[in-house]
Amino acid sequence: MARERRGARPLELAAFRQDVVAGLSRPQKSLPPKYFYDAAGSRLFARICRLPEYYVTRAELALTRQHLAAVARFAGRGCQLIEYGSGEGVKSRLLIRALRPVVYVPIDISEDALRAAARALAREFPWLRIAPLAGDFSRPLEIPVRRGTPSVVYFPGSTIGNLTPDEAHAFLSMSRGVAAKMLVGVDLKKDPAALHAAYNDKAGVTAAFNLNLLARINRELGADFDLRRFRHYAFYNPAGGRIEMHLVALAKHTVRLGRHRFHFAAGETIHTENSYKYSPEEFGALAAKAGFTSSRLWTDRRGQFGLFGLRA
Ligand code: AVJ
Image 1: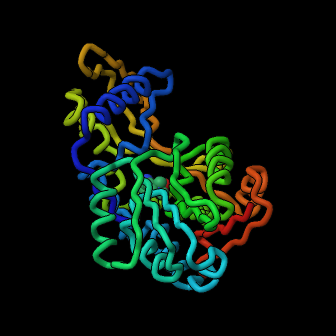
Image 2: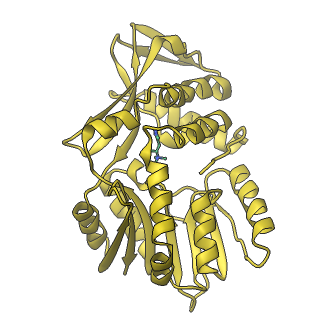
Image 3: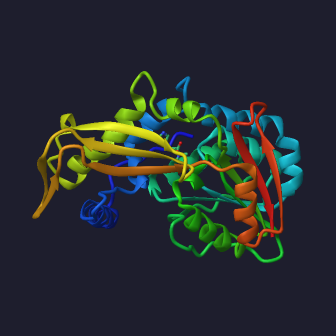
């Protein structure tokens, strides 16, 4: 799941700036996690996926391999396959090979990532019709699906964990209008110590990934974040059922971004990511509330990660 992001375009840059200023102006400062994935951040994320502590990627790949035939039967061969994420990963390839979709619609916020993924897939699957769509799953999209051919939305990687349960509910309801079937990758609740380790790796790659967000804001928006004044802080919040990632200011200081000044108290944090974990029952209930009447669950052998097959 290598996500490659090159420099942002003018429009993307304006939106980035707006989101950063808005987030840093809140009482609890926050930044949207979608901005982690510039070129450097995408490389760091690829390294996270190979960390011994980060079970997520391996567990999802293992379960996809293990249950591929059943997943393909559920989705149905010859469907229109819509995937959130640029589809550069091994899992997308496994699914495309098993499903032989009539059309494959990868959706991603980065046009560069989309173009690169589409080019690679076109070479590998000459028979595949690819219809990439630039967009962001936080807003409804006009997805060009043909009526009469069943559509399946594939949302792997536990990306849905970045949404609050309310936002996830809205996303699932919206998707139900596009496709009667969904395949959703969900990270499952487990021993908090294992979760803690996955977001606090010994090699410090997750810390570098988190801090790169400030470096990116400096590079692209000309802010003057001093990265030595912030420390990566990630913990499991059991009441919320989520990992929270923050950047903690180590001393009182001020950061500039154009005409803006952002004041930090010692110990104040920027909340950079939520990563929600669900029990099978919790996610099943969320899907039911969003109008999916039946759901199936495939997991890896250790029960760390789940792939839900939802049917409207
Ligand atoms: C890509 C959102 C699934 O939440 O585990 C990894 C991102 N953040 N390590 C996750 C992430 C820190 C990842 N997702």
